[in-house]
Length: 130
Image 1: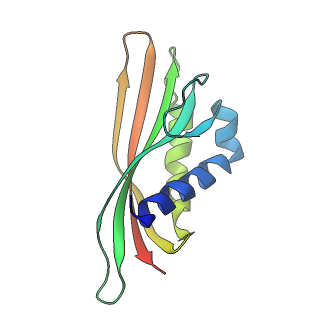
Image 2: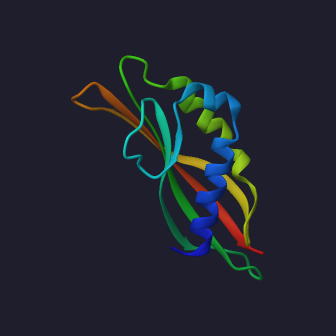
């Protein structure tokens, strides 16, 4: 993983953990899949990077997966909406990188056999070095 992917993951964890409204809607926000967690919970999943930049500044495009998982009839709409509303807050300094663009490019929702559900968002972050 390049440093851009790590920087975007760290920034996402900081933004999500720093939001009091989201904290009231989920039982925890985790880096990766938690071994044990009460539902609903959010996690920062995988990050995939590609070359991206400008004529004179190196950059990376990072696609980050954010996951909201739960059980029962309430499908986490309020928490999912809150996570999506926080995505623009990812813009800014992230270690040695600057996130200049952040937007949700794909969402997926599904139910599991055991009554659980999973809402995934893929967030595209465009990063410039320095």
